Length: 185
Image (cartoon, rainbow, N blue to C red; front, top):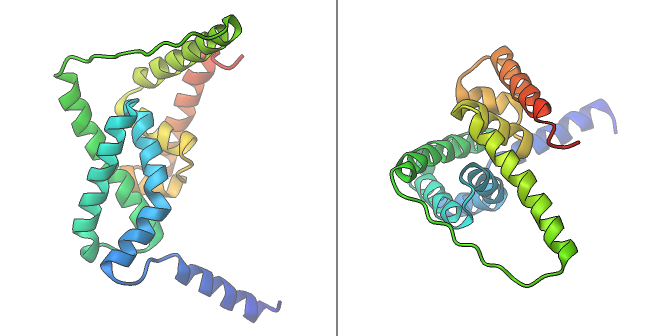
């Protein structure tokens, strides 16, 4: 493939990054591409799968309402969806902190080795959840989006309106805190 054909190929790839079609078609394309990533971010932030599904629905309802006015390049849409999800999570957290929480656990009869394995998983999960909750909101959100969801630095810079240097400092600080916990040894 010569350089002219490579350039043509790259341009065609770049054109496919945007979402095209009617409002409903663009909505479906965006939803299909990003709903799992947004859901994972929400559920990791609030640790409640049922409420996460409701919050995901809120994100995409708001997206559908605003779609005719939005830039439909994929990087802009992803950043917009993550920013909206973050705001909805913050609102949910404020509302939730005012309500008493109830948790119900269902137990099944299982073998001793499975119980021990589950206890180890639960202990690690609790320690990891404690670690996440020990971070401030910005650190936690950046950590979840970057390390657990794979959101790139350039998108995080846009979402949070911070410099590359500040973002690197935050990520490094969070990773040092995690390392000091010795969770994975």
